[in-house]
Length: 166
Image 1 (cartoon, rainbow, N blue to C red):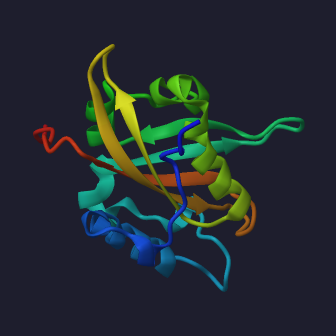
Image 2 (image 1 turned 135 degrees about the vertical axis):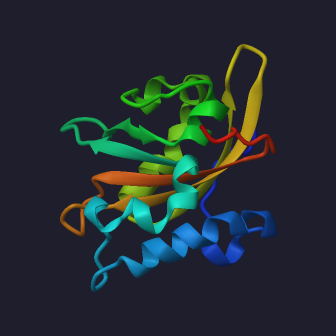
């Protein structure tokens, strides 16, 4: 069995090409309140307009006898373009990358469990043979400051093509 491409890293362990994540990471850190996680209401899109196309918000839906389910609440335009469509409202466990590799959800569940940032790598498939490599940063958000209720995810795609603005 091969080593999973999904692994946890600290900010200090970021490779130079991942400096793309530093502005959102620093913004998220600044929104912490006395060691409590920031809430969705603490994240103002007007503060980070250049990052919006690369972001996704994911709802964490608790279940009593199983790990929580994850559902895309919002998908940025770049994320939609690179993944082949707007997945708003879709469940992550039924998304294109998770159906090929169930371990793809492990970093999401680790962020929920640990309440810490996680960096993950993978591929998203647009069509049967077309795929794009990506790295993403998963940031926990919490309505009560303790339990993770949402994930703020920033994607960085290896494909250098940028969707033209509309």
